[in-house]
Length: 318
Image 1 (tube, rainbow, N blue to C red):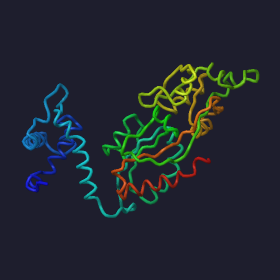
Image 2: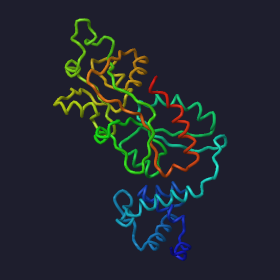
Image 3: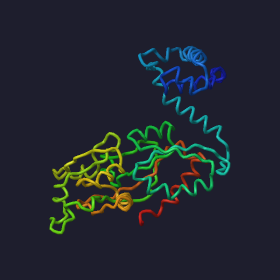
Image 4: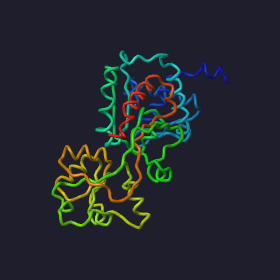
């Protein structure tokens, strides 16, 4: 370790480089850092001398990182995260903390989980801020980069199934919150509820037109993979971005919506819909809390994590 080189290194340079790599714009970086564009440009000049590389080149939409700058991204993120942990307080006092926690949740988790723990969180930490956003395909990347603190989404229990749908990368830690199965939602006047309609089995299910929620960029759920193994497919009439929209559209169409049971029963009561069993056999999935291993020793993170896990532990039996 060269202490002479370290003594010459200005941490502010690295912070500025990190923001420049995220924004790819001197103007936007200056706004985030509360600095003038001139100050950021001067810092960039020092960074170029420090790394003996241009680091960025001009582009039509701002600045573009060089290969050397891109190679620095994971090292820089880990270094700044370690420094943040090093300087974090030795204690965490929820009552006096105004910490900002960021979470990504699959939409069906909102009515199921948040009511279980929000009361306790804001009772113990009245100034805590919870910043939630939709679970997306890149949520694990954001956990790794420290852009979000937690994620909650469904994970298939069988490892082979999880390989098809959702497999966390190395460094991601998980805790099962509760298990759930799939069922179907239809409007009360749907023809399949007629007394003279055929038996509600897989064949009749596949005769229906379906509405499907798109998860990130994936149009397929485990059910579709399982049906494909039998050479079968559903007739998807419509794709929508969220669960609530799918359920709402069921109220005035004959589309069938296949959804997690906890959410299905909740939304059916809200919209006066009918819940039917899923005629196809499908393994249960587990709603799972995810976080990155670099957060393990963070006292505030640990406090919030324990509340979430303890309050959601018994939901499988609900």
